[in-house]
Length: 132
Image (cartoon, rainbow, N blue to C red; front, side):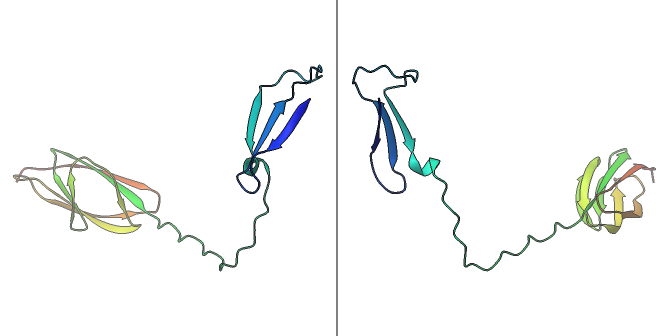
């Protein structure tokens, strides 16, 4: 025979199942001596209505495009006047629209170009620097 014992009442209470030693053969396969189950984990509690004001939707993620720039020989890249590092520059994130690319290397002519970048697209540019 299986007995039922509640160890503590309320949220977080434990339910213990155990066999009583009465010598009777149970139709149920033998169970471990003691099983412990948290009542809180087995009972569904209805969600209380919140009195908080409804949450606002998260702000929309701002769209962006990307620039990938390579040069032979390498060069220092400036995008809209901001130093973006030496080439190759891979998937440099920018806002959609027009952007100015400037490529410099000592002893070579500076290259300046304006490109248009669409949202979620990558503009790829490859330049060959010419000696001065």
